[in-house]
Amino acid sequence: MKYRVMKKQNNSSMCFVCGMDNEASLRTKYYELENKSILGLFQGAELHQSYPKRMHGGIITALLDETIGRSIQIDEPQTFGVTVELTVRYLKPVPLDETLYCVGKITDLRKILFYGEGYIANTSGDILATCHAKYMKQDVNKIVSGDHFIKEQWIYVADDVSPEFFELPQ
Image 1 (cartoon, helix red, strand yellow):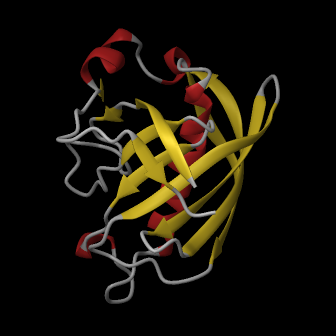
Image 2 (cartoon, helix red, strand yellow; image 1 turned 60 degrees about the vertical axis):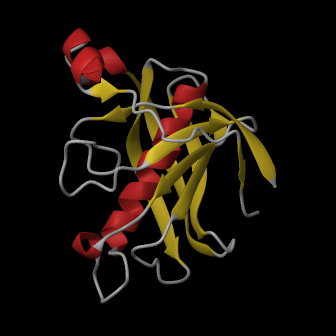
Image 3 (cartoon, one colour; image 1 turned 180 degrees about the vertical axis):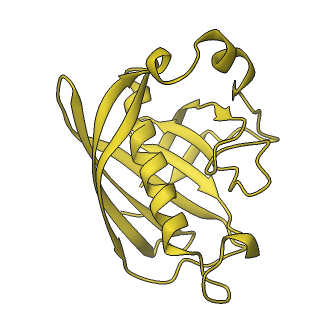
């Protein structure tokens, strides 16, 4: 199904998943979609492999965790999701050196906690891994040192071409 992009989320400086200054980072770009899902676009490299040409399971888990956890920022931009519990299912090998999608959304929102689910898919629409997760809501200022992080490490990175829509597998 095709969804309109509502907003591009910030990247951080040193995050393993979205960091722009971390040499090992996947440099994932995140987009908020009209259906309240979040989409991460990424591409693994040899640095991220386990078996030849396959992404390491821990990195797959990190991608799913980051993506689902970011979904809280669609409606609560000053809130980070702190991981409480993750259950990941690895369905097919996640290849390196090709564009992949990581999609997450909230399935149950409570006062202090939220639950979500997500998946990683290739451009053909094959679901490669899935995740169900539980997070605690945490104000960004309780996690980072306020203005310094927001001004210097939580950065907007413009795209060469800004996408208007994304077609996601179901």
